[in-house]
Amino acid sequence: MRVVVLHNAEETLEQGDAKDALAVVAVRACADAVVSGLRRLGHDGLLLPAPEQPGVLLAAIERARPDVVFSLIESYRGDAALEPAVVALLELVGVPFTGNRSLACTLALRKSIAKALLVAAGVPVAAGVVVEREDALAAGSSAGDAGHALLAEFAARVPFPWIVKPAAEDASHGIDAGSVVFNLAAAGARATQIALRYHQAAIIERFIVGRELNVALLGPHAAPEVLPLRAIDFANFPAGRPALVTYDSKWVAGSPDWNGTNVVDADLPSATEARVRDVALRAWKALGLTGYGRVDLRLDVDGTPVVLEANPNPDLTPDAGFALAWGRTGATYDELLARILEQAHAGPAP
Image 1 (cartoon, one colour):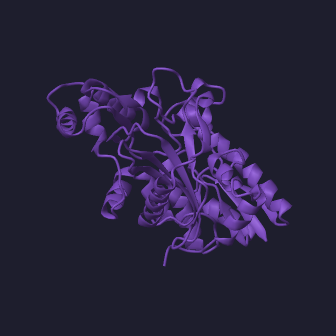
Image 2 (cartoon, helix red, strand yellow):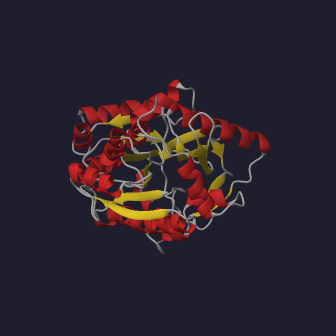
Image 3 (cartoon, helix red, strand yellow):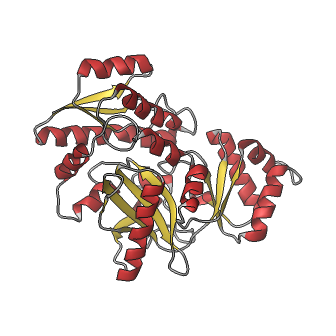
């Protein structure tokens, strides 16, 4: 088949700082790996960096005349919030494409809406609250404003520690050593930092201190395959800090967080593994995922699997978590790409 590998072309982001662009630039390495794998499979794989103008993008796809678009879009015009818009363009054109549809991509970037859907489906999530940007700015500056009142009310029912993160980002943007907070002042200051740096609301949740697990899923929406469960090993994480997968853990090679965050086989008791698989499947279905995705969870003190978030179209670089989970089945990276191609679809969900 003629397969166009579509990826974001920009090397900067509209918000954040220079380090935040590392995750965006890394998509090119993933795209190169995918093209190489497709060619080994006998396909005609072509790279297409997404042009900044939608009309030019559509014209480029039309000129390429692909049988399938392998979508690796993580942002568009430097804005992660526009990722679903590119997927919607593919749906509009009607060309088959891999991965998730635009609705699932949108929900993943709107964490408060995704959490509401998970709660409605009976999926365990951490108690949380959204601090709007305007309130976050106020919370960092005075004691009697709406932002501070919201945090005080949350503190009355949810004990510390909390985690404070951007409400509409992925790839761990905005997550670092200061994301876990232990008092109201630190929570307000962190929410304000997010409002200033990322120009959006902050979501504040109870920080689950138990083991962190990754569940990779692959296949159609109704019946995905659950790949071998993986866990985060924080044994070598910087001492004295809460165990947390930060932005540096994922993207800043050689950093203390990178060196201290390892992915290992989960090796769970059979009953716990069954609960984790069930919760991950319910999260997948509640958020409309299809093709491939990853559900991140933590085990609460009573062993309950608590969903942190779901990730449509996670990183497919050969040494990234999804491909490593696939490798635990004994299959090759190229076979993973073939499976993803098999699940390509056209248009929005029926």
